[in-house]
Image (cartoon, rainbow, N blue to C red; front, side):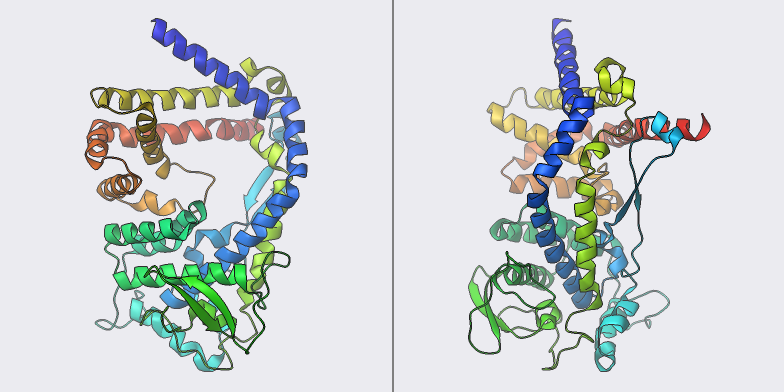
Length: 435
């Protein structure tokens, strides 16, 4: 009983602090000022990341025949709108609606809008070979498991965003290839192309790809630009190129993999110096930057004035407290499983983090790159999770032991967590509509 009282007191204190830092009327003001103070830093990072990941996406589209509509990173456009009076009375201070950008099209349309007509057929053959039901000829195409390709183009980009160190990322590429049965050549291609695009953005300013004040000017010399690239084979080579299409999809000796690159003509394959979709970088960046100043209201949303003044009346604070109880329950289960293991408190914390990560893979709501996990079978998710954390230094046998204990309850917990996360939002929208 004493232990329970201690946990309740701890969570109540966390609830009070959460309310004070996020939901109180003073928190709304302080967080708004902080967003103004950090605006320039945020904008600088957004421009770099939007540029990098849009060009990585273009490269994957052209070399793998991926539909642009399947790449989550390209669909991060939102309109911010003011609430109605009824919504405002329910504590809804700002609304965000996802926008479908006209630049994000199907693959064939992407090719026709960006590639010169005489070269279009060569790019379209990539899709014919990969196989489209109702389009490709029987016996002349192969069909990728849909989830594998979505995982490659979405999750790998997300993991590179979270762990941009190329040495670590190579391990993630190898691990993913092993888990999904992806060929070594494809792993080689993806790593080298991402490494090249990252190096070019940092080391060589070229038309359509580069950030003033951040991207360096390349060495003065011949017509070709030279940049150092860390390769899949753990070597650093100097890569020369003249045009953007060479960086996106061109065959580069010592870097490219046969079957995943093109021999590019001297005059280039793009209708314009850079593909039409490159202009989309500005749209993505400006959209994210404009929303940053609304961060205070976004994180303090669904919160009435009387709730802002008293944490005991706040449904959002209650929601946070419920999620904290949920987290503590999972951590206590891990403590029970590891009770007889001789582990330091730091290592036990890592196993708890691993379990929280497992639960989060299918319940993320505000981050791109996690949708493919929802399409995995339970066995696929389990294998991916165990091997991922084993690569981080945890014992795979202990991870397996923990998974066996929580396996039966995992689907129910995922559903429960999802419901808790959405409960206040759905209730307030309903009350605003039918009050």
